[in-house]
Image (cartoon, rainbow, N blue to C red; front, side, top):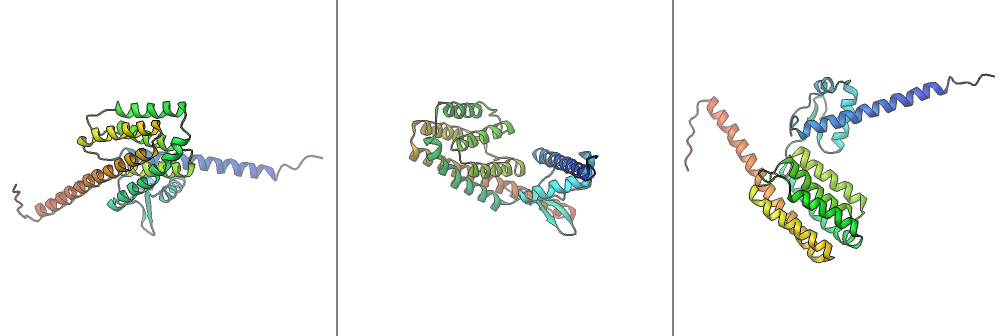
Length: 256
């Protein structure tokens, strides 16, 4: 008697189609993240998902699935009957991100120090050296990634996977949505010193000083970043006002 294969073949094909769809959704997700990285999609912008589908050489379906995924991650907002938009620029969100870092990162240090071995010290030293040797002329993306790597390496040595996942997402938001820290050049020396001091305290097993140093570091960075972004917003509002004033023939004088 011939085995009845008819029932299993459609199921197999269905599984293959499902896997292909997941692969396409993953590809779409990574493709959109690249556009965020290169600032081809910016906060508040409407997302032309059909154009994205053409650009990424796929149908709109995996693009929409990827956008739903990005909505869960906090990058995208769906407006009924209007489509998908990048979530708007938010100073409150930036402040909340840094406040979350202030809570999580110092709290992991006791476990990091407790489990620190020679291999961990070597790994942390390598990430510190990579950050210190990164381009210093401007706060470029390479330096941003090296900065992120130092903080995530420090956290990962704790072995606390849930907090590490949260931190990875937090840094994703900072890097992809807000383009990193926008740190003023004058603050880089202080940042380098803070990283060096945190490393030394961790290696010495000094939990109290390590937590105090890292907490102060994140707090100071938060203040600088918020100040920088507020200045960006003020300049943007000023340019919009001047554009409208010029359109309606209003004279604007600048006194200093």
